[in-house]
Length: 223
Image 1: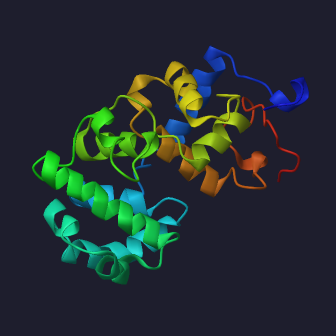
Image 2: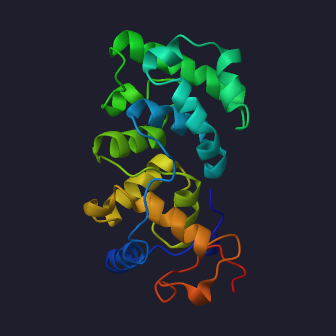
C-alpha cells in the first residue's frame, strides 16, 4: 500500500507516542462524542446516519426524528417513505433509512427492543461496523473494549506516526498498543477536535502542541 520507505513515513517510538497522546488529551480535555442523543436507540440511529455526513447535518435533523421515533418498535414499524421525511438531508439517505429499519426490526424481535451491549451482536446489525459498534458500546453503555476508527483517526494516526496502516482494524490494533487504556473512550474525539482546529488539509504545524514530536508523515505544506 506504500511504495517505499519515504512513503511509509516514520513510526513514533512507544515513549514519544505516550508523550504525544498525553499532550493531545491535555489540550482537548473536553473532547467528547459529537452527535446528540439521549438513549441507546437514539444513538444507534444517529450513528448510522452519520456516515459520510457532517455532524451538524445529523444533529440538525435528529430532534424531530427522536421525537417521532422513541423506541426500537417505532423504527421497526415504520417504512422507508415515512422515515425519509426525517432523514432525507443526509447522504445515501435511502440506504441508511433501510438499514435503520432493518436493524431495529432485529433489535425488536431478537433483543426485546434493547440495543445490544455486545460487539459481536452489534456488528451483525445492518449499517453497523466496527467503528459504530465501538461508538455505541462506549457512549451508550460505558463499555470500552476498543477505539473507534473514523476518517480523522485514519488520517491523523498516520500523519502523527501512531500507525502506518490504512486498514481501520489494523489501525485500531496499533492504537490500542500505543494509547493508554484510560484514553480509549475519547481518543477518536480528541483526534477529530485536533484535526478540525489544527491538523486539517493544510495543518497549522506552527501552532500545534505536539509539533516537536509529530513526524508529519505525508505533510507537504503547513502553516
